[in-house]
Length: 452
Ligand SMILES: Cc1ncc(COP(=O)(O)O)c(C=O)c1O
Image 1 (cartoon, rainbow, N blue to C red):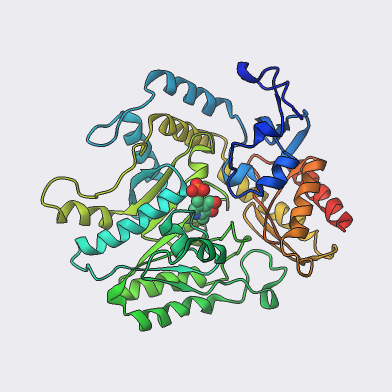
Image 2: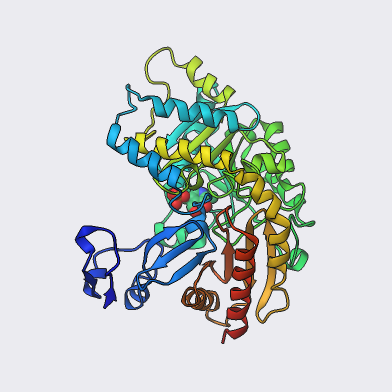
């Protein structure tokens, strides 16, 4: 039995969840049987902490899932959502509109680097990615280069779970379970290399040359067939892979040379994670499109978006003689409540100076991350902005088991971490204080020391 006595919802005020009550929800990316035997339930959250069903406080080391950058239940965001849902709950954005969607797009455009200045709304990172891939192919067609249909991703890339995203992504199980995926896709090699780069602080020195693999791919397929390259500037979900120095710059230069669009998937790096609005700003490399989600609404209401350069939008507006220029959209593109959440979130980021705050804390964070070096099983520590990856040596024959054990023990001790493979990924809310950082790494070090 799982006691649920302190929930706020009237329906569940005095209810208890039994094992049977947990059955119907088929949980995403979860070991369902393990979870349902030993459930971990949050019932409320505030700022840096979750509260569990048994009223324990858990320090959030992951901003939920890389999304709650301004901390949980921020009163300004909560109020904006409450007001909006009571005023205009839904309005279509197909051949109709409502002011907040236009206000939000305009506001976002002022934040964006270079001449990225148009916004297509989706509801998640996965949808943003699939939208961007479709826009890339349709863009080339609009420019009279309809043969440019091939998409280039990267090994160990994660771009969500749509068929487009898993095709350009580079994760083996997606190929194992879901078949042949999109045709016309190729992949760059990933850049992770412990032999050269273990325990790097910030961007690794070695590996910039791996961007030149794009030249090989262009030689193989011919540029006239390639629409776009998509990469995460910092890969998160496959274990915090930080781009080597010069790597992104080289990708940009090669894309420019061959007229290939460069897409940065900033679903986790967008909105301050590295101490700048976007990773594009942080690295000083401007892509042709950026995909975002998560932090755009502080995780409060689902929303994703694609940001595109002026020339991409113009190509659509100029090539279609009349009627609908992009044959694509979601019922909830620019949903009023999501727009209200996003506008309030942007206010909070600005008023509280949270991106600068992340930048100011990055050195302190780096020291804390690398203090784990030398602990049992720790084969790498890496960091950038307010992101950390701690790689553990796998138990022979049982990949992922050691990190998962670490996750369970941290949760018991009052700390939420995320693990992927045998890598611990940390990405706290940007409101984190130095004493939270001390607590986080203190607890984590204790747990790692005690791992069997
Ligand atoms: C880089 C990247 N792209 C896309 C996604 C998918 O986002 P969503 O889960 O909102 O579909 C994620 C999710 O973690 C991500 O990290």
